[in-house]
Amino acid sequence: MLNSYSSADKVLLAVDCIIFGFDHEGLKILLIKRDFEPEKGKWSLMGGFLRKDEVLDSAAIRILDNYTGLQDIYMEQLYTYSEINRDPVERTISVAYYALINIENHNAELTQNYHAQWFSVAQAPKLIFDHDSMVEHAIRRLRYRTSIKPVGFELLPEKFTMRQLLELYEAILSKELDKRNFISKINSLDILVKLEEKDMMSSRKGSYLYTFDKEKYDAKLLNDFVLNL
Amino acid sequence: MLNSYSSADKVLLAVDCIIFGFDHEGLKILLIKRDFEPEKGKWSLMGGFLRKDEVLDSAAIRILDNYTGLQDIYMEQLYTYSEINRDPVERTISVAYYALINIENHNAELTQNYHAQWFSVAQAPKLIFDHDSMVEHAIRRLRYRTSIKPVGFELLPEKFTMRQLLELYEAILSKELDKRNFISKINSLDILVKLEEKDMMSSRKGSYLYTFDKEKYDAKLLNDFVLNL
Image 1: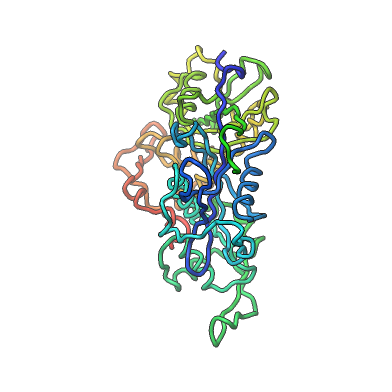
Image 2: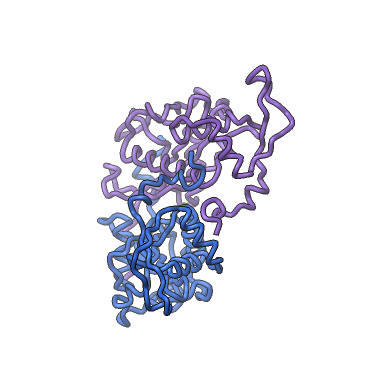
């Protein structure tokens, strides 16, 4: 009998939340100062232990809310980390979750009651435990996903300008993109609808507003994006 | 203090291994009959509990070897499942791993000493617990990955015919593909090298053999495959 419930070792299971934020300055990450030992006072992801009565998705939502006041954030499970000594106190397996949110949409929730703070990803402080490698992993996942399907639904207002979409991609990919080339690539995907309206704030002539054509987008199978098999 | 190690609940952590196999008949899955209660005698993935002294990757390798004799299989972590009652005996969180292997290359290891059995994915029996949804999830991941980058390195002999490559894709995608269209799509990726040699077994005139150009393949960033940003 290889598996016996009673003789199996139980472990602590933690959930860590990686929240990326996007504004006109680029890609940022939300961090807290850990408020207990070990590593008290060091920068950390928002983390906590899974409870008996909850599933991992709910634990991630509870922990994020606890530390930041952020609610209704859709987080996706990233990976489960199990290095033996990743937590020096006691063996703890951690399931990381991540999300990418529009910072301006959530400023009101992130009041001074909470001590969470945004950092530019490029200038973030060193984090406790293996949190730095979790963040690296999440950035790879984010870029990977961007490469497969257009992100943006959750991140842009319902109507947006091409410049806003470009800036989102530039933030995620951490590089400047050629605007003309970008527009032609995006248009070739045939998932945007150009509206009659213009955004008059951005320039004297105004900039056309676009919206995603969700039906067309959903109808595209993932396969279509690459090999069209 | 939100987090206190001593008051946190510990859980059982299991690892389940999803092994897909590929041969000329299509995509298959390797299953075992569970040899202990509950659900004794029912078909199941290869699973077991994480040990104190091992990381998840090692547990997956150990468990697969225990049940099947398969060694040196590179498995990738898929997802962590935490539904409260997924295991009726006791709350158990399970981390699923998956791999896709060439069945013919591993026939020798899968002797009758082990009771693992291949099933066509389309005709596999109902599995215990939430194993069916794990398998569905793994198939989605497999198709998703196929849509981003050509799989095949691990699955085909070093030199292969276009027909072999086509059959691999047909197995993963579970549909017939138009051969002419497939060849032109694959060629447009510019990652195959056509060899001077022919495979003379397949037809009287023979079929050209191909090999992957690993350098070209690696040089292609993921981004290139979609938006070329």
